[in-house]
Length: 435
Image (spheres, rainbow, N blue to C red):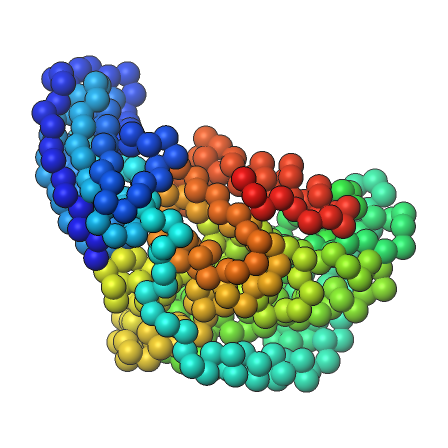
């Protein structure tokens, strides 16, 4: 684990009456990027917080290597931390308002970005396993069934799609394309975690931009039921779905999910209205996880874009850092959260679904973003996966971004995706990978 030397400085002023309720944590490098051996100076400001605040310095979001107390102040209180090896660090500061409400402030930084490695090696039979699984899946005819629907957008065709899939399951989704024209570049959107309906505009907006667009459910569910239907699924058969079968690579819920992405890409390649050249995939969180896996397993992908991808560095806790969602390393108590599982079996199975083990197989340009205060998909694992990619690539370090975009904290990725990468790719050109 990275050790962090911390020196506490006295607050400049006593706590003052505040208008808001917040704790702001910033570092002296605006981009939060440091060299190994360099020291970061952290500044803490508090609004609406009284008394002492507690701080903790967590390398790789693992166990704290330094912690202590500082008095709340609306002026900057500072302390320092030093990186002695490549790592990210999360600084967490907590305090309370006069009414007793807890307030949390987070700050993140990284040292030795290009030196952060996966926490464990790839399994020796990793490629053999996935080759066999893809062969098994592709042996089943997809039998795509399209049901035309109202695109609710001029000059766009829309349909829902169902395809047969492995083990008697199905891939369900939606597809759209421009009305005018014969062939188009194709795009696959994969979905973040949860159980929910698909919004029609996720494909119709892309089609209006000139894409043949496909968007699939991560689950074998119809895509347009009322919210109560999905709530019942999430509370019932799909409760804690990420833990279903997670003690075996043969039964993990993510096996069907990953293979459904392959099925979707294979389907796009069969369509006569695909231009035969451009095929991109993108998603965020669990969708970014699926997108990177699809880019690794499928031939002919033009580009992949992933915002705060999940599933990175599952064995992180074995070296003192937090793994990405769904944190399989610690989920060893079954779907119900109570039934003990063989932890070693869970850990070994997770290696076959870990994005860090797919990343070196990616052969196309990749755009990946991570939030330095993301405690769902920590940046350490995302960066470790990014460093395994050998094709042209671009990493977006979002300084004050957690997992969700708050006050446009994900704007750096969004701008690159919507204003630079997709407008270029839809024209059949390669995107810019150099900052």
